[in-house]
Length: 335
Ligand code: NAD
Ligand code: DAU
Image 1 (cartoon, rainbow, N blue to C red):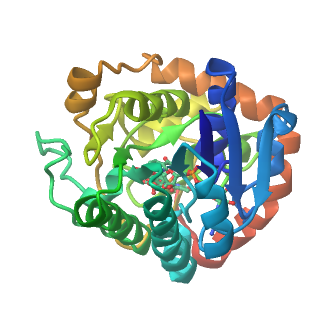
Image 2 (image 1 turned 180 degrees about the vertical axis):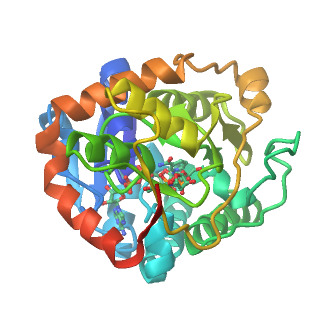
């Protein structure tokens, strides 16, 4: 199968490429990635000579048309992905997440190519901490940030292309991923690399915000399950019952790295900070038989800490610039 993977030099996309080549060695993988601040060829180390890598923009109509026309399936990971950045400057989010998706959809329509759209649970807004409900495929869209609004818009484009043009597309909305090769701007890698550097982890607000953690390999296995057996036009939520609040995650990281569980700083909260995400993945499990392999968040987190300890050369080049950016907007407000 000829697969076009957009954003394959980013966190989830690069793990998708590694996993695809390990589990489906006959696949012909092309990666299209603009190598923004979030993409790195180092994330494809070990597989560079088994893939075709094209440096380019998903909003480049001519390039996208040529690459999509040569593929059996497109898996669209490329995006501006970080909420904090979208608050500082929404413009690249509109261009990449909306215009980029539109460009891919038009090419997939012209060539009749199967398309899978990678999206997020953030399109559903947030839940109260004591709400017994979780997000399902029927939850109304109420995105909070420029990032999540741009992803919500891209999902709507996909649905419209299915209904109006008969595009063979599926969508998945996944919860928070963790694992190797995640940029150090994100919560878990930021805290692990802070502790390695002797810096106290940084917690936004009261830290009671809940995220529903899933290992990146479980996400990517679910994506393949949907490409293989998902019904065209359908949306599938992906999650692994991994709800934890940020305070508890930081305490776990600190304990695993030999620090006191309260050795962190409270910093300025994120504007519009979503309180809680939680996924009900019953449709994916019952209809397609998917189950997560990583049963223990603690074990997955320990392996992730080990990965960052062993791969400082991967994250060191991005650490100072990331912290310098945060220093412009975040102040320590308590210990
Ligand atoms: P990431 O920021 O680590 O990687 C994004 C990749 O896209 C980078 O390699 C970057 O260079 C590339 N890219 C950005 N703009 C581009 C453009 N215009 N043209 C081509 N390439 C471009 O992101 P991630 O965390 O791996 O997220 C991947 C996808 O998964 C996104 O669509 C995101 O919305 C979705 N998602 C992420 C999570 C999560 O927890 N990280 C959860 C659910 C869904
Ligand atoms: O839910 C899926 C989404 O998960 C994806 O769509 C996004 O691409 C991905 O970035 C992630 O979004 P979040 O905003 O939830 O992830 P982030 O890692 O930025 O933050 C996780 C939580 O931790 C959130 O409540 C904010 C908090 N936080 C974050 C950072 C960077 C902190 O308390 N301290 C920090 O330093």
